[in-house]
Amino acid sequence: MAHWLIKSEPGEWGWDDQVKVESEAWTGVRNHQAARNLKAMRVGDTAFFYHSVTEKRIAGIVAVVGEAEPDPTDESGRFVAVRVKAVRPFEKPVTLADVKADPMLAELPLVRQSRLSVMPIPDDAWAKLCALGGVDP
Image (cartoon, rainbow, N blue to C red; front, side, top):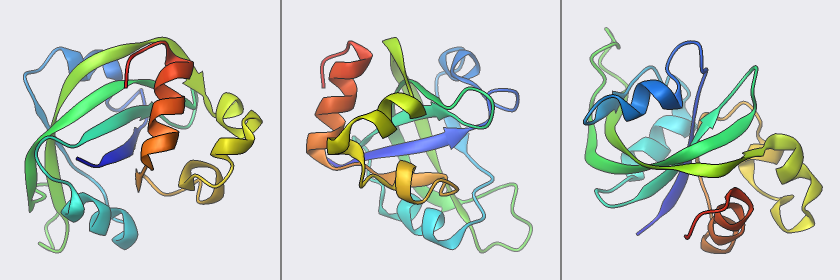
């Protein structure tokens, strides 16, 4: 099982929206590196749900429940979407400032490639971020 982080602008699709649905296609990714990450996701993988732009914080955890399929919002047919389902919220949201303050997390793409919207998270960083957020890994 792999771990990921997926970003969304809370005004477009936020954690509260995600928990109201059984599952949702993660659409709109147009960066090729992020799209490769979507293609690598497998059912059972987990991802941090990150509110970008205004909040810059991890809000919760989702599970991948459907692997890469054509993104219905992409008229070109080049990009994919995966289906995700809310698992649990963080007890304490973990901010980007929290991540940057921890030397163990300094190499995460969240810090080094701040514009990347879908990124892998190593197991040790996953455990650390879960602990910071007050949830079990």
